[in-house]
Length: 162
Ligand code: RBF
Image 1 (tube, helix red, strand yellow):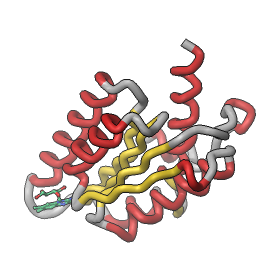
Image 2 (tube, protein in one colour):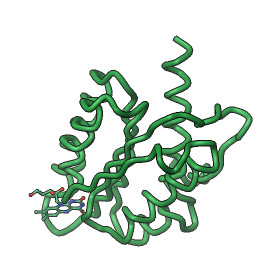
Image 3 (cartoon, helix red, strand yellow):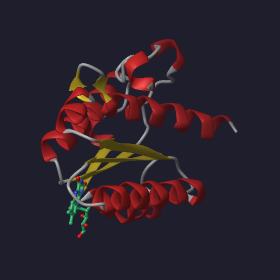
């Protein structure tokens, strides 16, 4: 699995353009907030470390991961951001709900990403256990929020260079 080979927080700073002047929207889900807040905070820290100014980062929360689609779409539609990061965490339970939320959210964000004028970054953790989530929000495998921040900056640069 990729994350066993790659720490989510590691990146090559020479390959990341400065985020100065970039505006980033972060929409995050309240479900599993112990995880999503850590992902969000990781993303913010990494954006700031790479030049994004705090005042240029805007947050919005939604109840669950499934609502990330609408939340991210609204942020895109506002035209106020150079990239939108969608953060959520789905943890497998006793019913097939996990599969529906993961699939629905992933497809919705993928479709939005394809259509949107600005990049939409996929920050959804889909985990079988809480420990897997903890490992990926600042634990043993790093923080997916960091990876999302770097991906956002790289995609903003990508769009600018076209
Ligand atoms: N939202 C999440 O972001 N993560 C979850 O692990 C999660 N599990 C859910 C499990 C059940 C049984 C239900 C009913 C909802 C869950 N949701 C979860 C919320 C979902 O994304 C969405 O907010 C609601 O389904 C809307 O009513």
